[in-house]
Length: 240
Image (cartoon, rainbow, N blue to C red):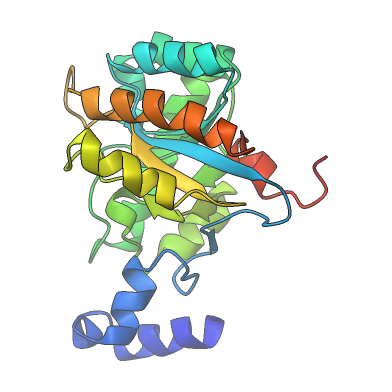
């Protein structure tokens, strides 16, 4: 993997922007070329990880109530700007037993951004989350799932592991009757599912599709014998 990264660095990002190899490095969930990353957990347990991007938002408390109703914990990848706007919601997320990850400060596309820009986005989010919750995240998810040169160094400096997904719900784009079967079909041992409790930095976002999806899929997946873990748990092969 490091050999690929050195090759891309030596050629230059702009020169290979249209290549299939760079597209794989930048966008594919299974790629760790540009930064250390995982996209699924261990397959030996009937467990999946629910993750939510873009929060906290004014809609997050309702999602927290739904998760509590089913006794499910999840991982929330939060934007620093949203945490500064809604620190109480970030704290409530932690208080409910959920895990918080870094989703940059302002939710930019990292494509063609400088190394300094990338590091600053991650660092500001780390500081915002720690300031609100007292916990410094260990996991990072790139906005839009897009990685770029310089992310490896930023993650290393900040002690972050990249987390992509096995299945992304497209709950900001599709209606619930299309999102629900997609989530159910992508749920298998070790799957990391990506949904959204916010819409970038939008104030008071409409996440009705997300809420409807979560209410529909949780009981169905439980009936199949699956249980839910946070990212830190689903990556651990020794968890009982």
